[in-house]
Image 1 (tube, rainbow, N blue to C red):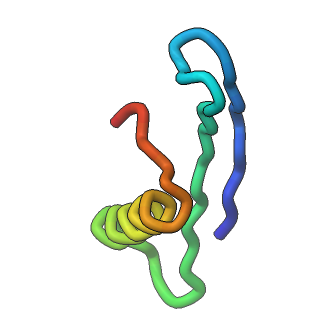
Image 2: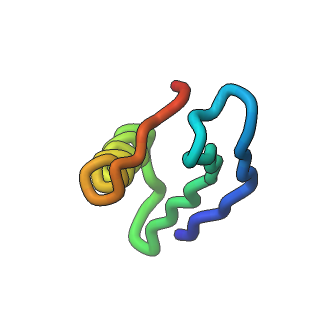
Length: 61
Protein backbone atom coordinates (compact mmCIF):
# COMPACT_ATOMS: atom_id res chain seq x y z
CA UNK A 1 0.00 0.00 0.00
CA UNK A 2 0.92 3.63 -0.09
CA UNK A 3 -0.18 7.09 1.03
CA UNK A 4 -0.54 9.88 -1.51
CA UNK A 5 -1.00 13.50 -0.40
CA UNK A 6 -2.92 15.29 -3.12
CA UNK A 7 -3.88 18.63 -1.56
CA UNK A 8 -2.51 21.04 1.03
CA UNK A 9 -4.50 24.15 1.92
CA UNK A 10 -4.05 27.05 4.32
CA UNK A 11 -6.38 30.01 4.24
CA UNK A 12 -10.02 30.95 4.36
CA UNK A 13 -12.16 28.51 6.31
CA UNK A 14 -9.16 26.91 8.03
CA UNK A 15 -8.14 28.07 11.54
CA UNK A 16 -4.93 30.11 11.65
CA UNK A 17 -1.86 28.00 12.30
CA UNK A 18 -3.44 24.89 10.83
CA UNK A 19 -3.75 23.42 7.36
CA UNK A 20 -5.97 21.02 5.52
CA UNK A 21 -4.21 17.95 4.15
CA UNK A 22 -6.05 15.61 1.80
CA UNK A 23 -4.57 12.19 1.22
CA UNK A 24 -5.42 8.96 -0.51
CA UNK A 25 -4.69 5.55 0.99
CA UNK A 26 -3.99 2.60 -1.31
CA UNK A 27 -4.54 -0.80 0.32
CA UNK A 28 -3.21 -4.06 -1.11
CA UNK A 29 -2.92 -7.64 0.08
CA UNK A 30 -0.61 -10.22 -1.48
CA UNK A 31 -2.84 -12.95 -0.04
CA UNK A 32 -6.36 -12.11 -1.19
CA UNK A 33 -8.77 -9.57 -2.58
CA UNK A 34 -9.65 -7.10 0.13
CA UNK A 35 -13.30 -6.65 1.07
CA UNK A 36 -14.91 -3.33 1.88
CA UNK A 37 -14.91 -4.30 5.56
CA UNK A 38 -11.13 -4.87 5.49
CA UNK A 39 -10.49 -1.44 4.01
CA UNK A 40 -13.01 0.25 6.33
CA UNK A 41 -11.30 -1.26 9.40
CA UNK A 42 -7.83 -0.31 8.19
CA UNK A 43 -8.96 3.23 7.38
CA UNK A 44 -10.53 3.59 10.83
CA UNK A 45 -7.24 2.48 12.44
CA UNK A 46 -5.27 5.04 10.41
CA UNK A 47 -7.68 7.86 11.31
CA UNK A 48 -7.71 6.87 14.99
CA UNK A 49 -3.89 6.82 15.08
CA UNK A 50 -3.66 10.24 13.40
CA UNK A 51 -6.16 11.66 15.89
CA UNK A 52 -4.50 10.15 18.97
CA UNK A 53 -0.83 10.58 18.03
CA UNK A 54 -0.88 13.85 16.08
CA UNK A 55 -4.09 15.57 17.21
CA UNK A 56 -5.48 15.49 13.67
CA UNK A 57 -9.10 16.58 13.25
CA UNK A 58 -11.24 15.39 10.34
CA UNK A 59 -12.98 18.13 8.34
CA UNK A 60 -15.40 16.04 6.35
CA UNK A 61 -16.92 12.62 5.83
